Image (cartoon, rainbow, N blue to C red; front, side, top):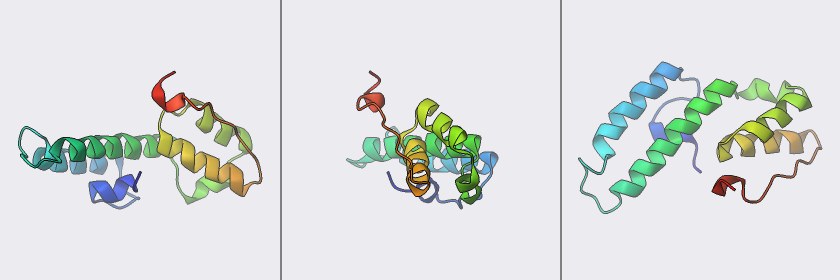
Length: 111
């Protein structure tokens, strides 16, 4: 997935309120009910995913300081986040710390 903040057209330092406003503005333009483009449904789904991911990143407060988190906190995020993008970030952090975390293959399919 592309950076969710870029998809929403906002900076990574945007607040939760700014994320919500950006989503609403873009959703009005690209919702399949208002946009007759052949890719409107796919584009809207990407926007929804970006919105959910950006909110989860803010919820978990993932930023440059996250690298300083203790391993147990990163593992918690890996284990309990339902968002693939957040798990990928946490996995990269563990890799930087020289640790491995094995995820279940079917996690994103809801199995």
